[in-house]
Image 1 (tube, rainbow, N blue to C red):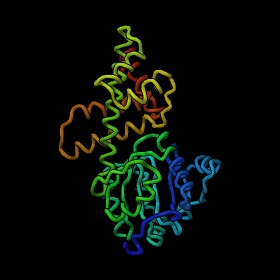
Image 2: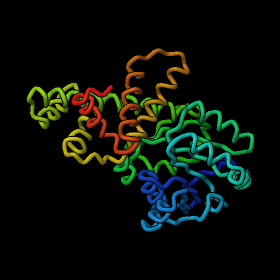
Image 3: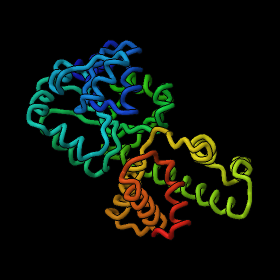
Image 4: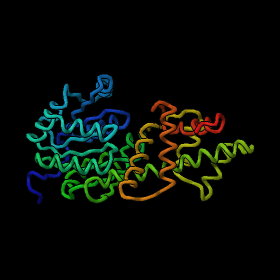
Length: 306
């Protein structure tokens, strides 16, 4: 049996959930529906109001959300924001008093996460990183893939939470390892989408039917996540609304490239993908869905952008 200060976080444990964006809202609502006492907070007034309208409980401040919480889940855009939130003096004081398990489900830089975890540990706060993959659809369904890094006992404590949010859990190693795995996963995903988009541009130019291109890829060795779940649904349809931002994908690919560089590795395709996605994010001013990389590549073809 685990000591009382490492109890398993079954419902109705109290969870402070910070970061109520497109992914955070369905995740928080699923936890609430599963019987957890969910307290939501976001720095954006509009996000707080939207969560309240969806039936979630909103707290007026981060400190109010944390008071008496068993766990703090962060679903924020990047590691810099995570650091800013967790090292705020009032927040840090409340963390030290309440001692919730901090679960960073954002996509952050691995080495930054490891450093932040060491700093929090000096205040008696345990942190694990647990980024997710699957997009908004699987967030709503509670079928995300979850990667978890950090103290094994802490990950064990959080398993009931992960079981609500996802259909698979991969324990990756030390703190920061899950963020490394998430960045690497998104690099592979981003490269697959670029390859599918460029194949589509070439095929159309030659006169091939777009639907046929996708069908053949999906029946052949070129099949990947993007050909199966993105090309017809969000690119050929013109919807461009998969629920994951172009700027976020660019950030994740850059995180993977930075990690490779920090490890002294020379990886030309990773460097190229980081450059392509950074240019696309710049062209779209960081806005829009990541499937709009297709529109950017069309512009490169039509206008000679570099």
